[in-house]
Image 1 (tube, rainbow, N blue to C red):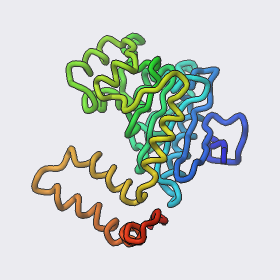
Image 2 (image 1 turned 45 degrees about the vertical axis):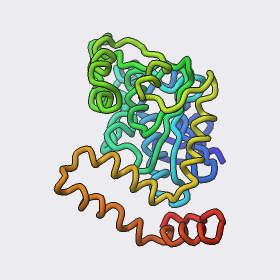
Image 3 (image 1 turned 90 degrees about the horizontal axis):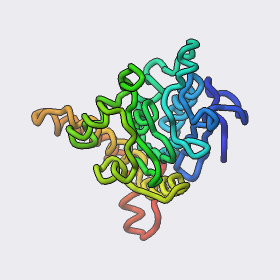
Image 4 (image 1 turned 90 degrees about the vertical axis):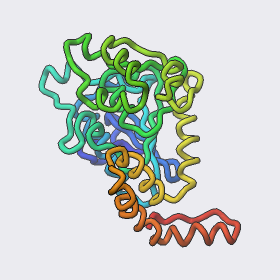
Amino acid sequence: MTDAVSAEGGSPSGDNAVLTEEDGAVLIITINRPKARNAVNGEVARGIAAAIEELDSRKDLSIGVLTGAGGTFCSGMDLKGFLTGDNPIVEGRGFAGIVERPAAKPLIAAVEGYALAGGCEVALSCDMIVAARDAQFGLPEPKRGLVAAGGGLLRLPQRIPFHIAMEIALTGDKYPAERMAELGFVNRLTESGGALAAAKELALKVAENAPLALAATKKIIVESADWTDDVAWKKQQEITLPVFTSKDAQEGPAAFAEKRKPNWKGE
């Protein structure tokens, strides 16, 4: 099923800047401004925010894949739109409707072509990255007199070694996906044109697992970096207790004992 998510999350339209498609428990979110290399304007930001809200609110969806139409992931902020007052920020979620408050459920970036500036920051807001070998990443903001304030400078040193993060951020140069994979920034590499298919394959594998368990697992991994030893176990228990007392926690062992696939309900 394919839908168009409007800036306000309204009715389907072929002209919408963000499209969604469902594949089982996977929601594919596509930035749909190929003529602008999927640069983020206000409509894109609101569309991504609406799609993430849908992903997180629906029990039948476990994971999302974020990609771009026309062979480019995202070239960053729409500078022409910015100069005319088009705001690519969503209150509570930040730039592109994602960088300040990413999805609660797992999200994979499927990257073809460029993931530059804000586009790289959008990819950094995802939990995994699948990229074509000829894709390129970078934070070129200093070349424009700007700063990568959409999470790039905060997240990049968490993903790759400090000195390499400094080099990428300070030079503003483009870096190939193969190099980023060597650094652990990219999970899987594909041939050109294959990123979305590989990301969907990975997403479907993840989606075989219980959705509540997936969301809790992500939450612990993301938040535990700031936990001190004296509170870590308590905070982990607060997140995991609802999972262990859920219907899915009964369904998993039952399916295992009966040698069948579990029927997850997300409750």
